Image 1 (cartoon, rainbow, N blue to C red):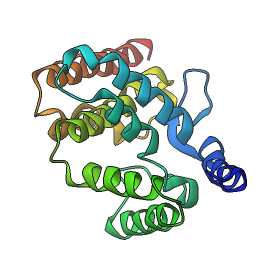
Image 2: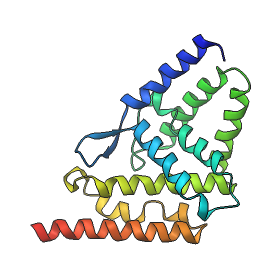
Image 3: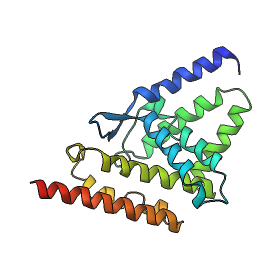
Image 4: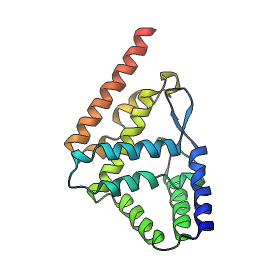
Length: 190
């Protein structure tokens, strides 16, 4: 890739470091989109033994790129995001990808289509982990950062996405136990 074009793309991607998410970290600051994508990629790597038939390198690429549109649109929490917001974000991704040289344009177009269609094992793994990472992060954050709706939402968030896999269902169950314990411990303090 031409060095100038690479720097331009990195400048767009840098915004993922600056754009914050609804989630908070355990040190009581808002998480960046880039931090979420990084940890999601790490999660994908560490579940590779559970999915030996999957191309985990592809799953990791999905995790790295899945929120690329948020470099342009910023983050909108899933419980607030509507079809119009998704359309704007998809248009931003399409515009960015179409500006890339080959082979990146073709590879990323195919990757985003696969993520959207949710037909492959790899796309389902990425999507389930994306939902689970969000709840893990909420569980690590101070309860004071939670919105009232999240006490229930965190327990159901991602249920549909984990349904394809016994391992993912077990992961969701374990995360839910942590959520319940976190909520319970705050009730004991009061």
